[in-house]
Image (cartoon, rainbow, N blue to C red):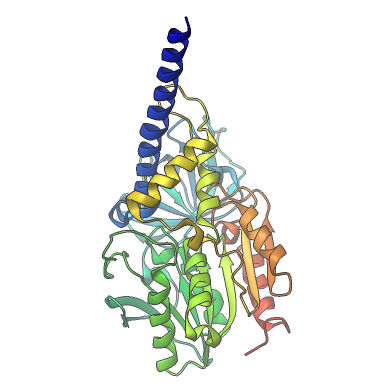
Length: 393
């Protein structure tokens, strides 16, 4: 009997070890494909069409979810981009429909075509928080410029302005400069020249030797090159504006670059300030394959440990919560953000109360604060940069 119990115990330990090793290996691979691998990240944008256009009217469009899940933006009032095969538009709403009610979570929105050919009923579509799909859609003249950086040449967009303070807009891990395109008119109307650079692993930019995104550990050097470009072109100082992972890139720059002293103000939208907490938060909503049970936190910890070994993730160095910003910081963050938890922004604001102002956007998902109220978003930035708190230029 005793031997049998020992044998059972050994088998049990072996099964647990296999579970954690196999499961940890699998989920560390998921961390890589969903967040680290540059090629995978480039391929994943802009994502799948999850809506069907059921009717196109005079200045209106009717949309219905094509799958079981109804995108939050479909029923949330605000301004959104709409992408379909061959075109891009902008919608507002939803609005009260004059047609019979749409079934299956359908809504009607006011609508305008921004570029490409108009859609027709039956087309598949996708809502887009970025609101622009081509740089030419931004209603401001621009130039394609090149920033010389540590890995070579980095393409960038430049929008001229009369101020000697430049705004530099840093996108997130979507690998798309359009993350921050909505902010370009805001800064431009205030007179700031705006530079929207790429960084390593972006389409058209040099690839990191590892092929991986490093959430600021390497990308800060590319941002430093963009800041140096602005200074070389006559800027006296810069405002940094970052989205999601771009927030981590900015904080890594502030912690490591000698040019951090040339930053006057920082604006962040849903910033990735602690990659480890972000992975934990996302993993808490994952389930185990086949059985469908919630992912144990201990398995997440194992996956992160294996990701460190397999992909060189330095988790402790990706925690920017203790980085002293030294300049005024304005943070926007949606309370329903399922990509980067708002808890990290709250933590950062609590640790640095003299520098950080946090604006919580109720019921709003990732980098969607502008979408739900563009006017309020713009006014908040303008007030921040014109106030005594932001008047350190």
